[in-house]
Image (cartoon, rainbow, N blue to C red; front, side):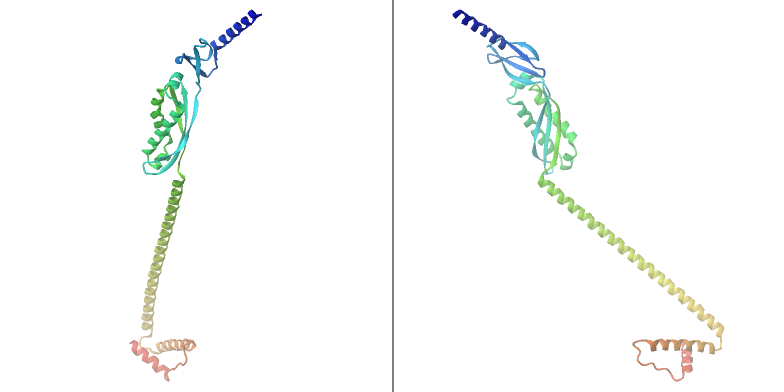
Length: 283
Protein backbone atom coordinates (compact mmCIF):
# COMPACT_ATOMS: atom_id res chain seq x y z
CA UNK A 1 0.00 0.00 0.00
CA UNK A 2 2.82 2.34 0.87
CA UNK A 3 4.53 1.48 -2.40
CA UNK A 4 1.34 2.41 -4.26
CA UNK A 5 1.39 5.89 -2.77
CA UNK A 6 5.01 6.34 -3.71
CA UNK A 7 4.29 5.26 -7.29
CA UNK A 8 1.33 7.61 -7.58
CA UNK A 9 3.42 10.47 -6.25
CA UNK A 10 6.17 9.66 -8.72
CA UNK A 11 3.71 9.59 -11.63
CA UNK A 12 2.23 12.88 -10.49
CA UNK A 13 5.68 14.45 -10.33
CA UNK A 14 6.48 13.19 -13.81
CA UNK A 15 3.21 14.64 -15.18
CA UNK A 16 3.84 18.00 -13.53
CA UNK A 17 7.42 18.00 -14.80
CA UNK A 18 6.30 17.25 -18.33
CA UNK A 19 3.62 19.92 -18.07
CA UNK A 20 6.20 22.48 -16.95
CA UNK A 21 8.53 21.51 -19.75
CA UNK A 22 5.97 21.92 -22.53
CA UNK A 23 4.91 25.37 -23.72
CA UNK A 24 2.41 26.09 -26.47
CA UNK A 25 2.76 29.65 -27.77
CA UNK A 26 -0.32 30.98 -29.61
CA UNK A 27 -0.01 32.69 -32.98
CA UNK A 28 0.71 36.41 -32.63
CA UNK A 29 2.78 36.07 -29.47
CA UNK A 30 6.32 35.33 -28.36
CA UNK A 31 7.41 34.21 -24.90
CA UNK A 32 10.57 35.27 -23.11
CA UNK A 33 12.33 32.44 -21.25
CA UNK A 34 14.74 33.01 -18.39
CA UNK A 35 17.07 30.35 -17.06
CA UNK A 36 17.90 30.83 -13.43
CA UNK A 37 17.00 34.54 -13.66
CA UNK A 38 18.93 35.24 -16.90
CA UNK A 39 17.53 35.64 -20.41
CA UNK A 40 17.84 32.32 -22.21
CA UNK A 41 15.67 32.33 -25.37
CA UNK A 42 12.48 33.50 -27.08
CA UNK A 43 9.76 30.97 -27.80
CA UNK A 44 8.00 31.32 -31.15
CA UNK A 45 4.37 30.32 -31.89
CA UNK A 46 3.76 26.57 -31.71
CA UNK A 47 4.95 23.74 -29.49
CA UNK A 48 8.11 24.47 -27.47
CA UNK A 49 10.06 22.63 -24.78
CA UNK A 50 11.93 24.09 -21.83
CA UNK A 51 13.80 22.62 -18.88
CA UNK A 52 11.38 22.30 -15.96
CA UNK A 53 12.22 24.04 -12.70
CA UNK A 54 15.21 25.75 -14.33
CA UNK A 55 13.61 27.65 -17.20
CA UNK A 56 10.60 29.93 -16.72
CA UNK A 57 8.43 32.05 -19.00
CA UNK A 58 8.58 35.60 -17.63
CA UNK A 59 6.99 37.73 -20.39
CA UNK A 60 4.38 37.11 -23.04
CA UNK A 61 4.83 39.68 -25.81
CA UNK A 62 2.42 40.25 -28.70
CA UNK A 63 3.83 40.45 -32.20
CA UNK A 64 0.68 42.07 -33.56
CA UNK A 65 0.57 45.80 -34.24
CA UNK A 66 -0.13 47.80 -31.09
CA UNK A 67 -2.26 50.93 -31.18
CA UNK A 68 -1.09 53.60 -28.75
CA UNK A 69 -3.26 56.59 -27.97
CA UNK A 70 -1.04 59.58 -27.18
CA UNK A 71 -2.82 61.89 -24.69
CA UNK A 72 -3.58 65.47 -25.68
CA UNK A 73 -1.20 68.16 -24.52
CA UNK A 74 -0.87 71.91 -24.80
CA UNK A 75 1.89 73.09 -27.13
CA UNK A 76 3.19 76.65 -27.62
CA UNK A 77 3.89 77.65 -31.23
CA UNK A 78 6.65 79.91 -32.50
CA UNK A 79 4.32 82.93 -32.35
CA UNK A 80 3.35 82.17 -28.73
CA UNK A 81 -0.06 80.69 -29.53
CA UNK A 82 -1.31 77.76 -27.42
CA UNK A 83 -2.74 74.76 -29.25
CA UNK A 84 -3.88 71.34 -28.06
CA UNK A 85 -2.52 68.35 -30.00
CA UNK A 86 -2.76 64.59 -29.62
CA UNK A 87 -1.69 61.67 -31.77
CA UNK A 88 -2.07 57.95 -32.30
CA UNK A 89 0.86 55.60 -32.98
CA UNK A 90 1.02 52.11 -34.48
CA UNK A 91 4.01 50.05 -33.34
CA UNK A 92 5.22 46.50 -33.80
CA UNK A 93 7.61 44.58 -31.54
CA UNK A 94 10.11 42.75 -33.74
CA UNK A 95 12.59 41.86 -30.97
CA UNK A 96 10.69 41.02 -27.77
CA UNK A 97 13.87 40.51 -25.73
CA UNK A 98 15.03 44.07 -26.53
CA UNK A 99 11.62 45.50 -25.64
CA UNK A 100 11.65 43.66 -22.33
CA UNK A 101 15.24 44.26 -21.28
CA UNK A 102 16.02 47.48 -23.12
CA UNK A 103 13.50 49.74 -21.38
CA UNK A 104 11.44 49.54 -18.21
CA UNK A 105 8.05 50.34 -19.84
CA UNK A 106 8.26 50.60 -23.62
CA UNK A 107 4.68 51.93 -24.03
CA UNK A 108 5.25 54.75 -21.55
CA UNK A 109 8.65 55.50 -23.08
CA UNK A 110 7.21 55.73 -26.61
CA UNK A 111 4.36 57.93 -25.38
CA UNK A 112 6.77 60.39 -23.77
CA UNK A 113 9.04 60.36 -26.83
CA UNK A 114 6.14 61.23 -29.14
CA UNK A 115 4.86 63.98 -26.85
CA UNK A 116 8.32 65.52 -26.53
CA UNK A 117 8.98 65.36 -30.29
CA UNK A 118 5.53 66.81 -31.01
CA UNK A 119 6.20 69.79 -28.74
CA UNK A 120 9.58 70.39 -30.39
CA UNK A 121 8.19 70.23 -33.95
CA UNK A 122 5.17 72.47 -33.35
CA UNK A 123 7.28 74.88 -31.29
CA UNK A 124 9.24 75.73 -34.44
CA UNK A 125 6.09 76.53 -36.45
CA UNK A 126 3.68 79.46 -36.53
CA UNK A 127 0.04 78.91 -35.57
CA UNK A 128 -1.40 78.97 -39.10
CA UNK A 129 1.33 76.66 -40.39
CA UNK A 130 0.86 74.19 -37.52
CA UNK A 131 -2.90 73.99 -38.06
CA UNK A 132 -2.54 73.30 -41.79
CA UNK A 133 0.54 71.03 -41.90
CA UNK A 134 -0.51 67.72 -40.37
CA UNK A 135 1.28 65.61 -42.98
CA UNK A 136 4.55 67.47 -42.49
CA UNK A 137 4.30 67.15 -38.69
CA UNK A 138 3.56 63.45 -39.09
CA UNK A 139 6.63 62.85 -41.26
CA UNK A 140 8.93 64.78 -38.92
CA UNK A 141 7.49 62.98 -35.90
CA UNK A 142 7.99 59.56 -37.45
CA UNK A 143 11.56 60.35 -38.53
CA UNK A 144 12.40 61.79 -35.13
CA UNK A 145 11.50 58.77 -32.99
CA UNK A 146 11.96 55.78 -35.32
CA UNK A 147 15.69 55.50 -34.61
CA UNK A 148 15.21 55.83 -30.86
CA UNK A 149 12.67 53.04 -30.51
CA UNK A 150 14.51 50.74 -32.93
CA UNK A 151 17.09 50.24 -30.15
CA UNK A 152 14.29 48.64 -28.14
CA UNK A 153 13.42 46.22 -30.94
CA UNK A 154 10.28 48.16 -31.85
CA UNK A 155 9.25 49.44 -35.27
CA UNK A 156 7.07 52.51 -35.65
CA UNK A 157 4.62 51.63 -38.43
CA UNK A 158 3.01 55.06 -38.56
CA UNK A 159 1.93 57.94 -36.40
CA UNK A 160 -1.12 60.10 -37.08
CA UNK A 161 -2.10 63.49 -35.71
CA UNK A 162 -5.63 63.04 -34.40
CA UNK A 163 -6.47 66.58 -33.35
CA UNK A 164 -4.57 69.83 -33.48
CA UNK A 165 -6.70 72.75 -32.43
CA UNK A 166 -6.24 76.07 -30.66
CA UNK A 167 -6.86 76.01 -26.93
CA UNK A 168 -10.17 77.32 -25.59
CA UNK A 169 -8.69 80.68 -24.65
CA UNK A 170 -6.99 80.88 -28.05
CA UNK A 171 -10.25 80.00 -29.81
CA UNK A 172 -12.02 82.80 -27.92
CA UNK A 173 -9.29 85.26 -28.96
CA UNK A 174 -9.48 84.10 -32.58
CA UNK A 175 -13.26 84.48 -32.58
CA UNK A 176 -12.94 88.01 -31.21
CA UNK A 177 -10.30 88.79 -33.84
CA UNK A 178 -12.52 87.39 -36.60
CA UNK A 179 -15.49 89.42 -35.35
CA UNK A 180 -13.36 92.58 -35.26
CA UNK A 181 -12.12 91.88 -38.78
CA UNK A 182 -15.69 91.39 -40.02
CA UNK A 183 -16.75 94.65 -38.39
CA UNK A 184 -13.79 96.43 -39.96
CA UNK A 185 -14.66 95.10 -43.39
CA UNK A 186 -18.30 96.10 -42.91
CA UNK A 187 -17.23 99.63 -41.90
CA UNK A 188 -14.95 99.86 -44.93
CA UNK A 189 -17.76 98.66 -47.17
CA UNK A 190 -20.18 101.20 -45.71
CA UNK A 191 -17.59 103.97 -46.10
CA UNK A 192 -16.94 102.98 -49.71
CA UNK A 193 -20.68 102.95 -50.36
CA UNK A 194 -21.12 106.40 -48.82
CA UNK A 195 -18.16 107.68 -50.82
CA UNK A 196 -19.56 106.36 -54.08
CA UNK A 197 -22.99 107.78 -53.25
CA UNK A 198 -21.47 111.20 -52.52
CA UNK A 199 -19.50 111.08 -55.77
CA UNK A 200 -22.58 110.14 -57.76
CA UNK A 201 -24.63 112.85 -56.05
CA UNK A 202 -21.95 115.47 -56.79
CA UNK A 203 -21.73 114.29 -60.38
CA UNK A 204 -25.51 114.52 -60.62
CA UNK A 205 -25.50 118.08 -59.30
CA UNK A 206 -22.71 119.01 -61.70
CA UNK A 207 -24.59 117.52 -64.63
CA UNK A 208 -27.78 119.33 -63.60
CA UNK A 209 -25.89 122.63 -63.25
CA UNK A 210 -24.31 122.19 -66.68
CA UNK A 211 -27.67 121.45 -68.21
CA UNK A 212 -29.25 124.44 -66.43
CA UNK A 213 -26.46 126.68 -67.71
CA UNK A 214 -26.91 125.37 -71.24
CA UNK A 215 -30.66 125.88 -70.98
CA UNK A 216 -30.16 129.49 -69.85
CA UNK A 217 -27.76 130.10 -72.72
CA UNK A 218 -30.26 128.63 -75.15
CA UNK A 219 -33.08 130.74 -73.70
CA UNK A 220 -30.92 133.86 -73.80
CA UNK A 221 -30.00 133.20 -77.41
CA UNK A 222 -33.64 132.56 -78.25
CA UNK A 223 -34.67 135.81 -76.54
CA UNK A 224 -31.97 137.69 -78.40
CA UNK A 225 -33.09 136.29 -81.73
CA UNK A 226 -36.71 137.04 -80.81
CA UNK A 227 -35.86 140.63 -79.97
CA UNK A 228 -33.88 140.98 -83.17
CA UNK A 229 -36.82 139.59 -85.15
CA UNK A 230 -39.30 141.93 -83.47
CA UNK A 231 -37.00 144.88 -83.95
CA UNK A 232 -36.57 144.07 -87.61
CA UNK A 233 -40.31 143.67 -88.07
CA UNK A 234 -41.36 146.79 -86.17
CA UNK A 235 -38.67 149.19 -87.38
CA UNK A 236 -40.06 152.70 -86.75
CA UNK A 237 -43.61 151.59 -85.96
CA UNK A 238 -43.94 151.79 -82.16
CA UNK A 239 -47.58 150.78 -81.89
CA UNK A 240 -47.12 146.98 -81.98
CA UNK A 241 -44.27 147.21 -79.50
CA UNK A 242 -46.29 149.46 -77.28
CA UNK A 243 -49.14 146.99 -77.40
CA UNK A 244 -46.95 144.04 -76.49
CA UNK A 245 -45.22 145.85 -73.64
CA UNK A 246 -48.51 147.06 -72.32
CA UNK A 247 -49.90 143.54 -72.38
CA UNK A 248 -46.91 142.23 -70.43
CA UNK A 249 -47.16 145.13 -68.00
CA UNK A 250 -50.83 144.47 -67.31
CA UNK A 251 -50.19 140.75 -66.84
CA UNK A 252 -47.44 141.50 -64.31
CA UNK A 253 -49.73 143.86 -62.42
CA UNK A 254 -52.45 141.21 -62.35
CA UNK A 255 -50.10 138.58 -60.86
CA UNK A 256 -48.91 141.13 -58.32
CA UNK A 257 -52.49 141.89 -57.32
CA UNK A 258 -53.26 138.19 -56.85
CA UNK A 259 -50.24 137.68 -54.56
CA UNK A 260 -51.01 137.09 -50.84
CA UNK A 261 -48.42 139.72 -49.85
CA UNK A 262 -49.90 142.41 -52.07
CA UNK A 263 -52.12 144.90 -50.25
CA UNK A 264 -52.40 147.80 -52.67
CA UNK A 265 -51.53 148.00 -56.37
CA UNK A 266 -51.06 151.49 -57.87
CA UNK A 267 -51.33 151.80 -61.65
CA UNK A 268 -50.03 154.85 -63.48
CA UNK A 269 -52.66 157.27 -64.70
CA UNK A 270 -51.34 157.27 -68.23
CA UNK A 271 -50.49 153.63 -69.03
CA UNK A 272 -49.50 154.42 -72.60
CA UNK A 273 -46.96 157.04 -71.56
CA UNK A 274 -45.54 154.65 -69.01
CA UNK A 275 -44.99 152.00 -71.64
CA UNK A 276 -43.41 154.52 -73.98
CA UNK A 277 -41.13 155.60 -71.17
CA UNK A 278 -40.03 151.98 -70.77
CA UNK A 279 -39.33 151.79 -74.47
CA UNK A 280 -37.23 154.92 -74.33
CA UNK A 281 -35.17 153.41 -71.49
CA UNK A 282 -34.68 150.23 -73.45
CA UNK A 283 -33.38 152.30 -76.34
